[in-house]
Image (cartoon, rainbow, N blue to C red; front, side, top):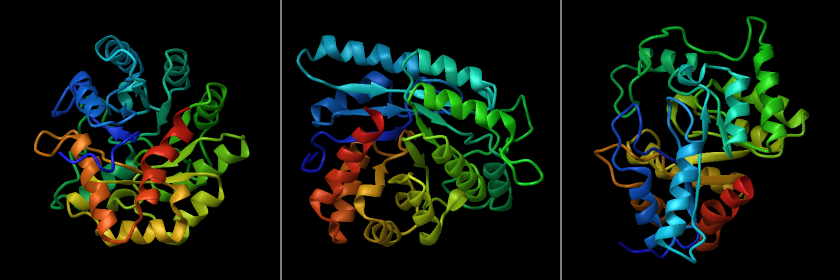
Length: 294
């Protein structure tokens, strides 16, 4: 594997074992592959709950296996039903354990379920019913379009622990309301996930509005790799917004696909072939993730 683009990069969106869905590799296996490639660390995400404790254990193990290497592993909590849904107590617990990310609902978001039901034949979108016990899907706005009270409580915990607020798979109108509320509360670390994924696709005008409210936007390698958007669409977003406002991650971990380390390399190579400069790739894969996580 070439490692031209990987030095000191951080993948902020990967899926590892243990997980409620089939995954390619364990936390430790990914960490060992990533450190050998020269990466600075990764964030592990699980739709079914909290990865903060796992991340701490793997990071400690890496310090023993590779003394002198400053390799980091971060986790956080996804506010699906497995964590109690929109549960401020789960955010508090994650923060106390060193969790860095708080993702709003993903596979249990109402928006995710509605899109997958409407586009059931579309490949690459995953399973809309990964949580079979509680069938109700989660939305963060009431009937009047106002954020429900639990959201403010969650944002208070995010701010208290200086965590990264990530929007998950909620609808674009929900994401914009959430970003605006977070910015008004003084939350500094905001990431709008999957702006090029059909489920949460945001126009360039909306992406600009996100960043005008202090957020960064995320593009994942999985999305164009799976044919869910074009490579040029992502390159255009980078050129329009500026690389200082963009995070590039992988969303990999599916057994049939390459590892997140391979995904980071291929993502960089593909965008570089479209004219995105090496220093811009470094900004989006190393500098910006570090700004969020440290």
